[in-house]
Length: 462
Image (cartoon, rainbow, N blue to C red; front, side, top):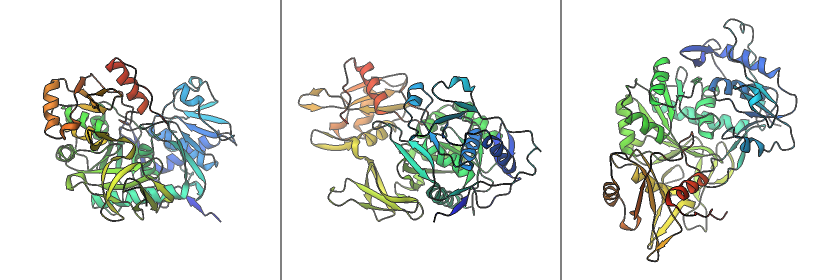
């Protein structure tokens, strides 16, 4: 029989669970807001959580869960995305912090702002959920193909976040994450933002800032408004933009990065500027968070909690499986690893972005990593076209580097890459088509390449 498990095991109800524009919101207040919203929800539905305000997103989650309703977390609120959501036979209902009338494909409710302080004094009921209940459904990012749904069970999420909280507290040399406030530039609907901002606050003991600052000055202001110890949850692209901006940044005790490997140079610069610890998280929507590393100390990743890795027999070391801990069934990873043992590994790149040029093997992730290490390159990515030149497919580089010319970029790459992977064509562009998480989907990159290369780029076979 499945056990009933609380939203959080222990928490001071009068301590901040969130901050809004520099003002604290207590856990007691949060429970009052959850109860108020839960009373307005339909008895049977799949809840589509479209809130961009991180506090209201958390209220919408907990209110849905307290009514036994699953939350769907689409990557965006585009009409096409919403029209293709599958409720599994259940009606859909959107929760939003925009005007409900803007949601045309389903009924919608607006999540209210926090109630005035003092109205929640008697509300202390902490929601409890069945351990095997499917409480959330996330979609893969689509960076390597069509987004796929993945349901998450409550007990597994608790173990996932518990392992992350333990690791981050260890990195901070603290007994736990109580008192740590999270400011984030990533959306809460993405698996990384969902786990490392919202759930790390609800279930890991930290507090969250309600906003999602994007521009460097806004990120600096958001950090300055919350007390220390504070954490910044971001991506390599956002972090690089922030450090290049010249904006004065306050001390940050923990910087958390994910979605793409971070160069050791950028990690060291971030630690020097923020006077804190930078930690990378490795994971995927399918398995959740898998491992972490402090990048300035080396390129080895260590699995979280009870997670263990092994190479799948018969795949010649190109397919790897994670299991244990919060991963309830053995799950194949989309990356090629170099295992040191069951808990330690180096990351080579995605198995489906391995490329072969003139008899040499590399990965697009590795090439992108090297391109973005070049001083003066603000952003860049490689593309493998279908054109064959002298019997060989040659990679193309799209680069944002206003102060460099193509020759300088190629010279920088020659010092970092084998000659076969140095691009014959460098296309300088004002920006790449990145999503809010900093990722570029396969579809967006294909359309971008078609636009800038001036020829039809066929869609890859499924």
